[in-house]
Image (cartoon, rainbow, N blue to C red; front, side):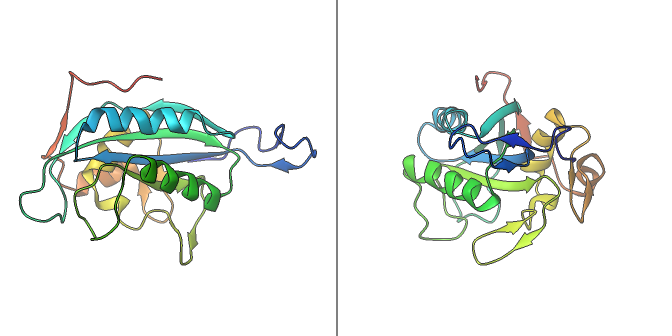
Length: 187
């Protein structure tokens, strides 16, 4: 993944004349509680409404088996969203968490069923590790429900430190990642 051909834009919101780079980011969205499709659509709509974010592409919707979830958990609907943004990585993470919260996400147990999950997978070629954020997402390279939809919309996509999505996908089990032809997320 590369930076945008025009790496700087004016911050029109503040009119300060400050310049910030445009970065391409990959977000994975998923839901396995309630109206799963409506929650994915709502997440994309919320991203579209975010200043300094432009939704570039949305994958098809895929139904997947839950990974590491408690027994009896329902299947997920998943998609990947490609955006261009001038937000800092931490501001983008804050927005992702706010979108999850708006859809009733509870964070009481790891891998528990959830109304909405919005994961920041990569932001440009940025590598980061702090208390709030790890980039690239630490398990994205081993998750079929991220790699399959990502490859669909970004055949040249890559995860810094791990390689191209097209190469990584061969090393993961994608048998439980099923495209839902009957569902679509609209811009």
